[in-house]
Image (cartoon, rainbow, N blue to C red):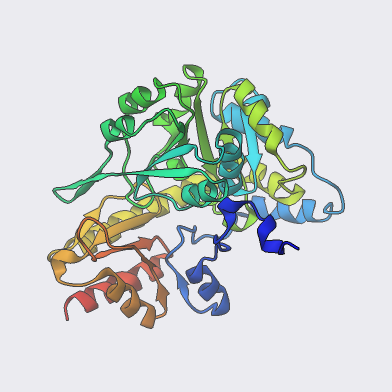
Length: 366
């Protein structure tokens, strides 16, 4: 008789449940300062809290398909209507649905690294083949390499994904290069999780009207500060959105996050406050740590900053460990480009940012 293990599809064998150790640590000890997961340091606005309270009292009812909030999202992005928008339990679920729609075992997904780990996680669970194209690191900058992405395409390529701004490097790719990749006709996902911090004026949503294969994703976990409510969305051609939406689990987004998201989207003053605070704090941290001899700072266009401390003679992991002793959790970064000096800082409160800057300076001065 076969063992239960023999019935698993072969491509999921050996894959373990995703666990974020630093988030687990932060929940176990609430006194730690969370400067590691690109969260927003501000609690939801009063308008959002009012919506949570109102619809919390209606949690005995199933949610609808979110036609009201989808209409609002379409309006904000200059799209025809709710049929251009698909909702997800965070963009993590959105990627899962997109990947399921395009990838079969053995099919290839191209990503530009370093990048957001969820692309790899959902590719692996489907038996897809991940093709990682490294960014170019030169003269203290990490740069997109669109030529390398295009050269990586094979007959098995079924998806290309690029974050703009990129996580964790914080930089943008030029519109002309997005168009060059879109011209290939391959499903092309543009991850704009952090786009609100620099403004939506140069969003790649404009490509949707010219390219049926372009899909744009966003989340309310970052600038809107609703990471714990799990609300993300995808924008695209209505026929493509309709087909991908067939993968939706019914009622995948609950009543509370759906109406809380609408309140957040309508609270333009709350968003403006969060964006200004974030960008001011980014400037402060970059100025302070940029003055540390040998420290390379990658200018951020999101709510995080990547550093390379190799020039200081310090290891990134050692900096993270030292700052953690001070009660602050930073994000380690695997060695890359022949450097073990990389680490990342999430923007926290003004006091948390000051503490982090002082701790890093203190360690680098040793």
